[in-house]
Image 1: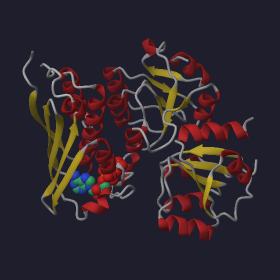
Image 2 (image 1 turned 90 degrees about the vertical axis):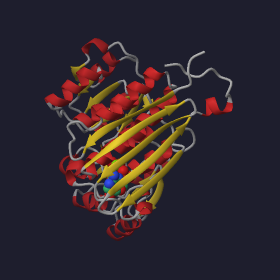
Image 3 (image 1 turned 180 degrees about the vertical axis):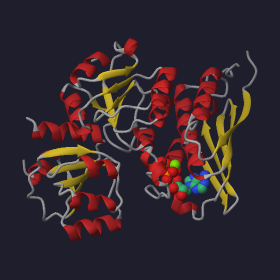
Image 4 (image 1 turned 90 degrees about the horizontal axis):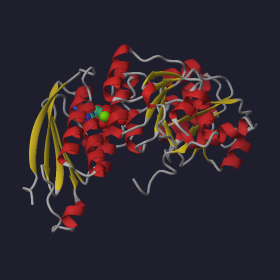
Length: 121
Length: 111
Length: 156
Ligand SMILES: Nc1ncnc2c1ncn2[C@@H]1O[C@H](COP(=O)(O)OP(=O)(O)OP(=O)(O)O)[C@@H](O)[C@H]1O
Ligand SMILES: [Mg+2]
């Protein structure tokens, strides 16, 4: 699956990174707590979140996240968009809630980017 | 689908209020910010979160949610557990991360 | 064969300013990549740096983050001027947080930052003086190099 498929499944708007829609995705991580993302998300995953502030982009950059999916139709500030453009991190915005967003992507074969907590890092 | 059937099918562990599992699960809500869950969750939702402090019980109770699922092996804080038992708000736990458990719950309630 | 690696630099972090929170960690991540440090170590250092930076921004007036890189390890040392931590053991507990509502709205304040810093570093020492400030020293070891000392050093 590519980001373009994700965009279609979620009927999402691409706010940043239209030129990166060919990127492949296999895994995702859903959270609103950035420390939770920092503790568990793996590189090259999608980050699904209800947050829209610039720290989400920073967190995604630190972790080499493939793209940020902002849920509930919330639009990021100009500042967030600017930072994402600068750091080349795609942002998609979907009107679905996080539950629906996760459910739809999971049903299409995306898996959680960690199986279980503990064990390997 | 009834909460106890969700629990059985997905192998969730029951941590609190094991006597209140007959509720109908009408939908789901994922969120770690209490203000968001307060504003946007719906009656009968099963709430998936990483938050463990006692305010989650107040939110679930006020919004009349079907129950709370704690993810990634987190356990309710002691005062959270006491409050959940007192108010009959089921707290369930799973080792899985939110995305994975939500995918499975979604599939059960939207077959 | 190149020179053994020995790099050090300090960065200022302004307290209370979420505008720039994370820029230092981004810079440190870029430096480590340039130095040719392995991706796993870059990632771990970036995470502990970012958690440290956010803590300084969230709780202190100002601080510095010092990066030191050798072939054997990457060290991160943070020093801040701020309230200090009254009970370090309690602060280390997952879920304990005194973060303000504003910090929580940004997705921080889950009380997991210090635990993450411990999880992703090989050594972590916190010292703190009330009303003065907090100092956190962390080290991420390059075990590859320690176990195989004959490997050529990373060149600048
Ligand atoms: N540099 C600091 N100065 C003063 N207090 C601090 C400092 N760093 C941490 N603390 C205290 O320790 C608590 C725990 O810190 P920790 O980083 O683990 O969690 P958090 O910042 O509250 O939330 P999270 O990091 O998950 O976003 C903080 O809430 C704060 O009370
Ligand atoms: Mg913190």
